[in-house]
Image (cartoon, rainbow, N blue to C red; front, side, top):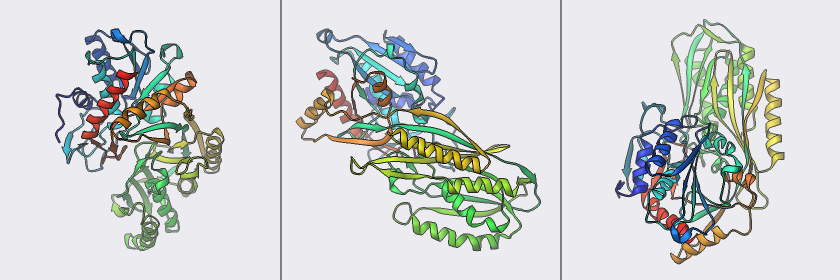
Length: 474
């Protein structure tokens, strides 16, 4: 199957893939959407964080019908393979088709949520489609804490029914989503002159993935696994130089690179490393068996952390809670609470650890946050809250859900309703309007937040036709 740019939803996906649009770098794609509105003589609003709302008046036969919101986020997770030369601030995605799937060479594809954005632009560009008044809301910074949606103003939201286009699966819709909190821990560090041998430890081969939907799958976290190895090597006169791992708080980190000095030889360190590696492979055998670790000597670096700072950093990362915390007792298979240490970064005088905490329950969010804060204080660190967003509670009755159910039933398909552990912007809309009727919809895509991300093109086409049916019947 080819990526047919004569189809409007494919055309617009291709267009936005040319524009860098990682989180906090959405101004250029917001510019594009504003220019689109102007070219199509559509009213729009743009706020100070680059959210854009485009309004399209109802078709003549739908003028008395209730308005409808279409909503998607315009930012994407920017991950790439280590061996790929790519600048997410400047470069266009390198799209290609393989076996009916759209992919990007060596990087994330941005199907999350480029599919929703392209659907909305295609709908707005279709004057033949019969529709109620449309309020198309393009939000920013979803991937780093739903920050754009949090900036929306209640007075700008006209409708009380909404199709969120960030829910993929073609035959699925979400019925509730988790709340969450982002935070960063800074461990203060001190350095001293170094004359010891220097080494680089590299973790690779892990699957990674979305830290909401996949957190219960026991996939390896490169930051945590690196700290496990470093903790096992502590009696080898270890002095950290740098610890860097992961790319996004909400992506389970796949890779980490640590530089350190030691008075021990490479042979001695490899001898100690081997049982640690075997132990991790045994732990991950059923869930993430591609794990690999390599240790190699590097050129002399003249400064390294003191033993006290080294221990503080290793201890904090090693002892910090991470991953699956608690299951839902109400919905089988649903994670109720989790956290992900998605990123570790070394700066001149500190090491920062970035977390994504998830739970619809404030009690769990506070408890996890407080545990991290207490451990940080013990390890000469401080904690700062970056974002806090509400969950989307389940509603038994939904006219939009009934409509989607009937449309799929006509095609011989049973709608699957899912409560998810990931965060969705729906929570912010319900917080602004508790009566908001919401469904999520979108095509099948896989491996979100990883360079293995891929979009099922046949599903991309089919889901667009279903979306147009929903809009026509609203």
